[in-house]
Image 1: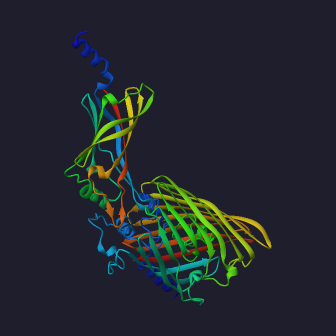
Image 2: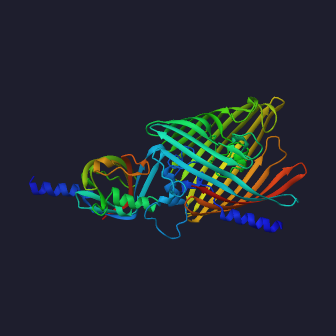
Length: 178
Length: 390
């Protein structure tokens, strides 16, 4: 078998995962942090974008649009901690080869490796996602625990309440294969 | 003349300040736990520095302006005092006017002074000492340090505590608010009054363990009695506690339980008196400006010369905040007292305006129908109050 035929077969076999995807429907990215004495902090944005270069899927979150419910806290988060002027996005890259797309009507859950870029640092991470397929549409929910110290983010502190370094993130979106 | 007096008192109420207390509707802002903002882990009373900041950011009217930073005036006494980090100070005043009419009787108008307390907490590492000292023109006898019928020095709470390193656990000993149900500000609501768990005067001495963790909080207190009450036969011994679960940041569901025994009950004048209350409560930020609060408690009393009797009480309240700082509070409540002849019902409409940080003006109209042997008596109360938490 010639190398050209082999290459052609590999491309054809991998078509389902190389297919370009586009976001459809609503999306959201949230984070939750904890502090002392049951203190909890949640932030949310709907500014989630999805890119597919055929090899990997790239999920980007616009950090400047994160809202926690308190304007002043949002400003501190943007300016003091995330420094969104310099680092406007959180970006997660996951190779398509690691992703298993479920059959129609099925749901799959998997933990895969990825690369997370945040606050100017890129770290290897493990993402747990659930994919539900309905026809050509997929509903994706991904959970990713992060440690703020890993990304050189100062631990948020305000009047004696300090957020713990471990935070949970959850991103959900819908997409379709082209 | 009476009308003029009523008008003056209502105006006094309108331009006096309300007290920043436990606001159970803070779940609207994702705060299902109270401990970040209050020294008391179950809410109410002395504010932490963080709590003071939230009172400006989340409670006070903004008049359309966006806060650049928290004002220094959120500090104690409008920022006039800057205590060291280890010391938290607060001054609380709540007073106004009350108009009360029962049945066909003429309305009674009187000024009310519910609280004028200095509160402080000193923190040394994982240890804390917390106390309040105030003056009460009337009532609050159970918190009185002085023995007169009126004009008493009062200390509603004073305790020593130890926190674990994560501050999820607080062990306290002293005079403490009874952990039970909603820690709501309306201390005359039947769910507070009839369970004797209000923050006005029904604190008791004992040892309490409070937990504030992820999605759960609770407090259990062993009650040793009210040592300010003499002789010892009047003192209740037993326990009080609650557990609350927050499956989401906008929802909290809890259960409470209380059981005490007194050799002689100070209210009912019955010997060997067992008093129990067991119930459920919940807080739900429905969405938009609406928060629903509810509590339902079973009341169980028994005494040496009286068999076990059952009663119940409940409160359902909607807090609507159309714009920040302005609250419309709609409440309905029910009470069947142990041994009572029927069900008492009540409804109220309140309007509260936090027009400055830590300064609140509130007016409530409360209508109640009290069941009697001959049918019932209607009562109507209008309370206007100014609440300052400086």
